[in-house]
Length: 388
Ligand code: GLA
Image (tube, rainbow, N blue to C red):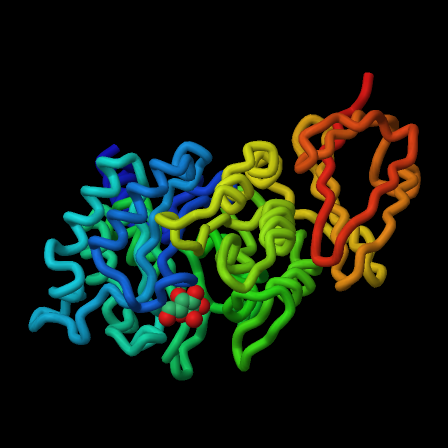
């Protein structure tokens, strides 16, 4: 008997294999992040103003709940004990106070750091300090950690991100773990048990189809996502990077199309505009309940590309209850004439009622074809419901 009890006690003390905190992202996380508009020019004042604006303009009510402080919040050095320190001028009250402010306003608190020795902005990175840093994040009330990949040297990605995952686990506070490894080592093939989302590409640029050395317009990101649908699902999402909706490099049609396609991709929706100066058009796009419902559908499927012809792409996302979202996207610069014979969409079974999501109207059933003009870089989004 005593032997048995001893064996049981040993079993209970044996370290469990560390794992991510399960169930924190059953649908794609939604929020706002400082980087796309502000880069390193951030402060606690800006973040509080942004949070207040997200409440005033309806973004929070629409579901944007994570406020994520990206690169630039740190002081240039750790303290004598090796702890991360916020920049004393721009974050004079410290990160715990900022987290408290956000929580009191109903948000979740996100923060950025890097798996390398330094962040991309040259501030202290997490390498070698993972367990210590996770304790800091937990003590500040952090709910979401975006973990970057600059200055990683010869580090192995899976090992490095698993170390941070284990550190978060050991610190004991449930934190959504967002891998920002840019798709370098195909995290979709290994990160399901490591984090809740992983970047699939280099950085998004505020444009439709421009390209930098390392960054790219959303049209190119979209092409990369086309092969990745099978890897996404509840609690483990492909992240095609944050939104540029409402930013200067997008026409209104491009903002709408970018948002629609990210919704179709079951992408995490992190707004990247200045919420204090949001036009009505931008607000209408980002808070559209019908589009958000497609993104947040509980089945958690990422859309696949059913067809790609010049000027005519068709994306299809299976939804709960036998419903489908279908997005027609004109990737050319000219208006095209769409003629849809629903029976050619071979994934459909039977007849459906058709809802034009952006047009805000029901447009009949799939037993009658559908025809419309579609301007360049724009989309038509329909939701199909089985018709009894
Ligand atoms: C990388 C990331 C970006 C942003 C910057 C911050 O480029 O991919 O999303 O976090 O670092 O320096």
